[in-house]
Length: 291
Image (cartoon, rainbow, N blue to C red; front, side):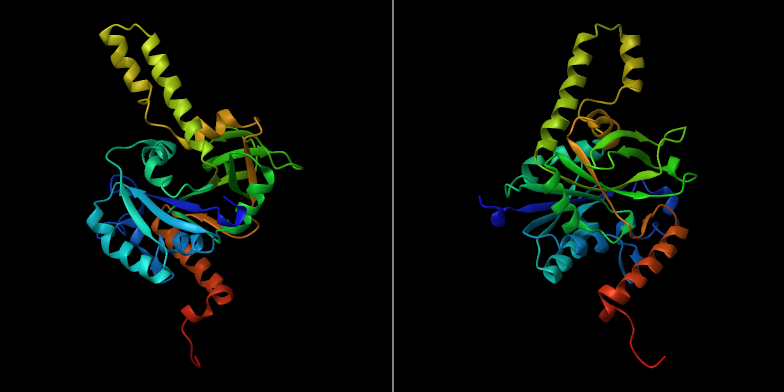
C-alpha cells in the first residue's frame, strides 16, 4: 500500500445516558451529543473536522445510547458529508481504551494505517490533518493533542510533561493533587493500529494477576471492588501513564481555543467560540444582511 493509499478512520466517543449528569437539564430531552452548539449538534463539530482528514474511510460513534436516538442523525450526516458514519452501541462500560478495543474488528475493517480517537464533549478547532502530519514525523504509536492552561486550572485535567525538542511524552498523570505541568491532555488522539496490542497487553496482565491470586471468597469480593475487570481499560491511567517515556507517545500542542463541555454554562461559551471560528472558516453558516 502506497502512502497516498493509506486509509484513516475516526472514532468519536459520545458517552451515554448514565453519564453527563452535570449537563442537565439540557440533556433531559435530547442526548447530550445532539444538543446544539452554534446551531449544530455538539457531535457535528468533531465529525465535520474529521472530514478534513486526508483519505478518511469511515467515522464511528461509540456510546451507550439506544441506536434509534442516533439513527436519523447518522443517516443525514453521512449523506451531507459523503463519508460513512456509523453508530456502535457498547453493551457495558469498557473504559475509553477498552471501548476502542471492543470494536477493533470493525475499526480495522478498512485496514487503516491510522486511527483518530476524539471525545465528543470537547470544543476546539480540531487541527487533525496537522496532528496526523506531526504524528507521521514522530513515528510513535500515538500522538496527543495538548494545550497550555493556567496553573490553577491544570489539576482538573490530565497533566503531562513532554520533551521540548522531540515532543515525546515523558510523564502523564490524571488530575494530580499537586502541580505537575501547565500542559494538559485535550482528549484528541491519533494512533497507529499498535494501540490495540497495547490495550490487549493491559488486559492480559490484569487477567494473569487475577489468576495468580488464590483468594478466599471474602478477599475475592474485596478485590473485585478495587480492581476493574480485565476488559475495562482506561486510556489515561492504563495506557498514557505507563507508556510515557518509552518513545511510544508524542504530543502536538494547539495554540487555538479549547474547552471541555461538561456544564450548561460551558455550552454557551463553546457556542460563542464556534461562532467566532465560523467567521473565518464557514461564514456561509452565519446570518447575512444589513443588520
